[in-house]
Length: 132
Image 1 (spheres, rainbow, N blue to C red):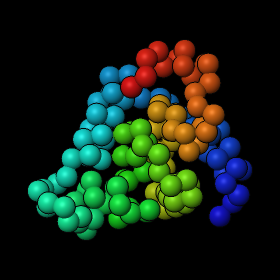
Image 2 (cartoon, helix red, strand yellow):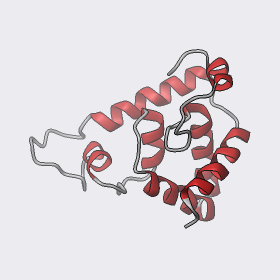
Image 3 (spheres, rainbow, N blue to C red):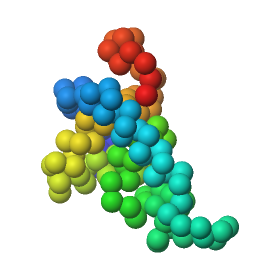
Image 4 (spheres, rainbow, N blue to C red):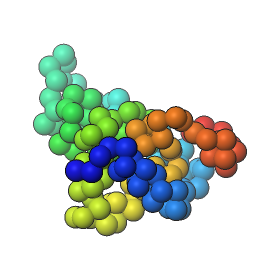
């Protein structure tokens, strides 16, 4: 895998060229992702069950066994493991271009800190208006 700093810069450039989600749709995606991240699929008590519960899989595993996990992290405003996230982006680039494009749109819309460690720049703040 490429050096993290170089890969982060490359993904940032691709994401900046991607189309951003409309505000209402982005807010809806964010609310759904937060529900998915925090709400357990069923009442399993204190025993964690990452094989059958989405929230457990997303919260417990460094590389969740959950399809679309990176998009859920980005949309929910959670910070994923940077190396795992960049590895997932590289995998999506080669294996699934549509998923890769969706990740880029999410990065463009939500500006996650694993890609933008310095936070939002002033132009992004002005374009977005309010935070989701």
